[in-house]
Image (cartoon, rainbow, N blue to C red):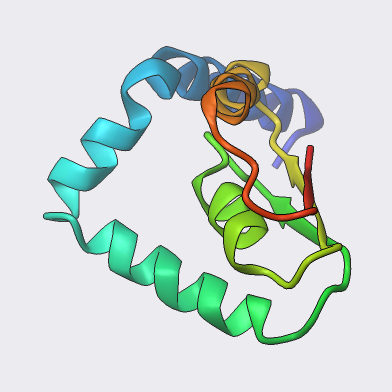
Length: 108
C-alpha cells in the first residue's frame, strides 16, 4: 500500500471516530444488544486479577474499559487510557470528571 494511501485511511479513521464519539457508547450497547458490558466486565475481571500493576488501555475509545479497571483493580493501580482520536479521549475525561473515585487508583 502506498504511504499516502495509508495516511488517508488513517485520517479517515480519525474523522469517523470523531464523528461517532458523542454517541459511541449508546450505539455500541444497541448494536451488541448490551453484550458489550458483559465482555468488558469479563476482560476487566481477568486484568484486575493480575494485581496492582500499571495498565495501558490502547485504543481506549471513550475509556469504558479503563474506567472499569480503575474501579475494580486493587488500590494503588495506575490505569492509562490512550486513543488516536482526541474526541474519544475527551469523552473519557468528561466521564472521569463526573465519576466518583472509590479507591486510591489513578485513571488518566
